Length: 144
Length: 144
DNA sequence: ATGACTGCAAAGACTTTGCATCTTT
DNA sequence: AAAGATGCAAAGTCTTTGCAGTCAT
Image (tube, rainbow over all chains, first blue to last red; front, side, top):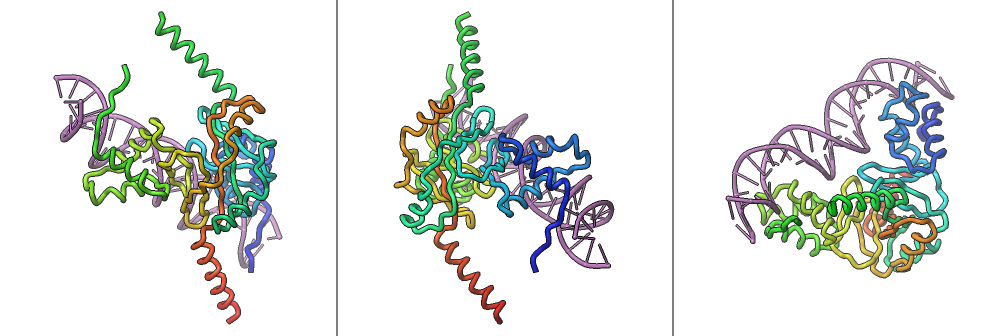
């Protein structure tokens, strides 16, 4: 007998929060987001539901950024950009490796490949700009 | 004035341990590996040196697998396969995205892209085999 | 001698989990 | 009423860090 799944408004709103943003949220982000409308929400519930949604295939994990696991409600194939400076994650919808790649690797290496992730790293616009400002300040200070 | 860097046998052996394996070790793995020959080694020292090596560009982090950060002493471009079952990480030396990809993304999205990672997920041979055995057992049990 | 490196243990950050309670069916 | 979902807080895991002692230069 399979385990029954019951409705819960909190669960529904947690999923909606993830699906309604493109910021690739962490558990903490979801918690803070829903706290105002769900005063009694517990962080443990957010974690449990994130695990639940991933098992159900409703969301995917896009890995750990700055120590926190990040999730994505978009399931269509796409790549990500991670800013190593501020931790923001951006979708790159136009960057998508060949769909046959998984099968190619499966055959070539004899592995049961299920999916792949293509993730770019660097600095987002605002961090790149901030850093150049900071460098200018340092240059000004050292030349002063 | 730049900070001086001094020799340490422990540091050298930590680096050698990472460079001498293709298992993409975690801090704990390195610690256990060196413990016999370095009885006084501390896990904190391993962590500190991993950070140091990454800053020096001697190793790279390949992300968090099963809660533990994993490192790679191979710096030439290549992809990875992560077994979501046992956590093992394999090199895929023949799978390497176009070298211009970083620049393409930089231009297309206006980001300062520094690098990218292509990671495949699935089950390694032994886990796929073990699971099929396990499934057989379950089938046998339920039909018994 | 200076200051870099380490051991140790405490602290920190993130996530999981046990149990009593509340809610859905 | 039965069983799933949640709140709370404790526990668990991995990693970082402060401080005193050690070692390389």
